[in-house]
Image 1: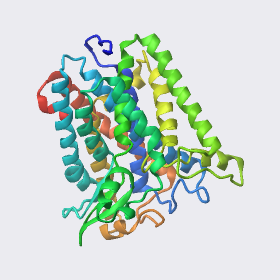
Image 2: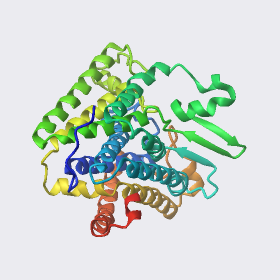
Image 3: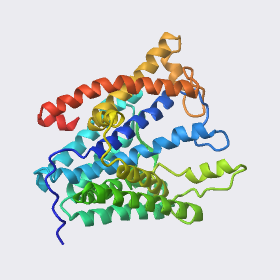
Image 4: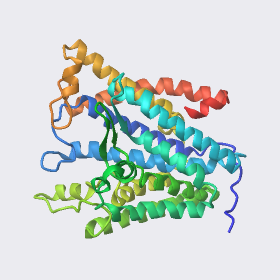
Length: 390
C-alpha cells in the first residue's frame, strides 16, 4: 500500500526545531558537569547521590534518543521538499560518512585534546553517522516497513543482553560495534571505545522516519496523536519497569527511602539504550512535541536558534566547554596532567559545586546563542550545498 503523499513542506516544522533546541541546551549541562563538577561519585549511584545530582544527569538522558529520533523524522520530511528517494539516499549516505569523519577527527580532538588520536570514543555522532548510512538503504522501503524494523530493534534487542563479545573470540569487534559498550584494542597504543554501540540506535532513527508520516495530519490532529503516543510509551515504561520482567538488564530494587525507589525505577541503562530507557525518554519527548505545536514566543525562538544549527552548536559547545576548563585550570595553577587524572570516582582538581556548574552551563549557552544565531541566518540567506552538512 502506498503511503499517502505529504504536501510539499514550504517551511520548517517549528515544533521539531524547538524540541531539538531544548535538547541541545540540556545536553550542554551534562558536558559542563563532566568537565567542571567536583563530585567524586556517579550521579546515578543511589548510595551516594542526591535528587538534584541524579536529576541533573537523568534529564540529559533525553538528548541522544530525541535527537536521533528527530533525525529520522527530518529525513522523511526532506522527501516532501521535492527530493527523490535516490537524492535523499545519497544525501543521507554522504552526511553519515561526513559525521563519522567528524567524530573521529574534529570532535574526538575536542573531547580529548590528543593530537595522536590514541583512543577514539564512538559516541552519539558515531551512532548517528552509522544510522544514516544504514537508513540510506532502508528509505527505499515503504515507511511502514522501516518503522517495523525500527520497533523490532527497539523492543527486541534486550533479548540479547546476555551475549557478550568475549564469546566471539576474534569476532568480538563486531558485537561491540553492534550491541556492547566496550573497549577494543586495535594496537599497543590505539583503541576504540564503543560508548554508543549501533543497536538499537539505528532502530530509533528508523522509528523516527516512520513517525514522520504522521505530519500529513494537520496541527490539531497530530498534536492529539503525539500526546497519546507519548503517554502510551510512558505507561508501557511504568508497566514493564514496575513488573521487572523485561526491558532493562538491571531490574530496580527497593531502597531504604521512598524517593530512592523513584530514582531506582528511573535508573535505566543508556549504553546500549534499553527498551525502558527509550520508552521513558522518547515517551516524554513525543508528548512534548505535541505540546509544542503552535508554540511561538520569545523563549521558543531562542531554542529554535539552537535547533536549526545542531551540528554547528555541537562542535562549538565541545570546544568552548573543554577549552575554557583547560584555560581556567592552567591559569589557576592546575596542570593538564592533573586534569587528565581526574574523572569518575576521582576528585577534579578544577571542579566546583553543583550551583557553579549550573552557572557555567547558563554562561556557555548564552555565549553560544550569538554565533548560532549568526549561522542560522547565514543558512537562511544562502543555499550552498555544503551548508546542509553543518
